[in-house]
Length: 154
Image 1: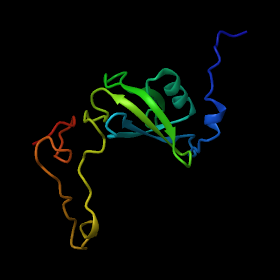
Image 2 (image 1 turned 135 degrees about the vertical axis):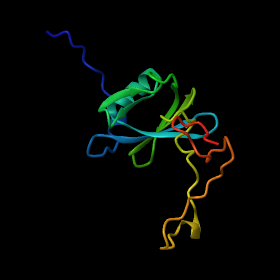
Image 3 (image 1 turned 90 degrees about the vertical axis):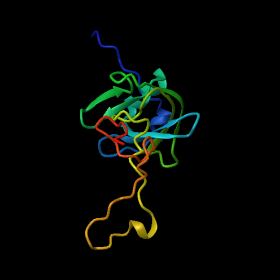
């Protein structure tokens, strides 16, 4: 007999619906539960999803560090799970969370506030060098230039 306690598995009814990449991962999108604000995209495997669903604290898989990380353990910016749903293909999970502090590793509230991309004709390269991507440079705006920790540089 060993001292190891067997780890519980993700419910088969959930695991069977998941489509994973070649590394066993699927996308996880974190969204603020009460405003609909998209906060971040990260990666999960079955174990990260199981930990998230059973603990109520969101756990991801770090592709660079090759380890699990529970959001907020080092930054204090915790994500408390309010609801979870798989997409129609089973290759992404939507996590509706209550986010405390910034969700992005830069310290920003969301990872998607680095500036809007151009649309239409403005998105086409003219062939005469690279054009600047326009940003709204007003301080505090979602597309304002950012410093190294995500603070507004203006």
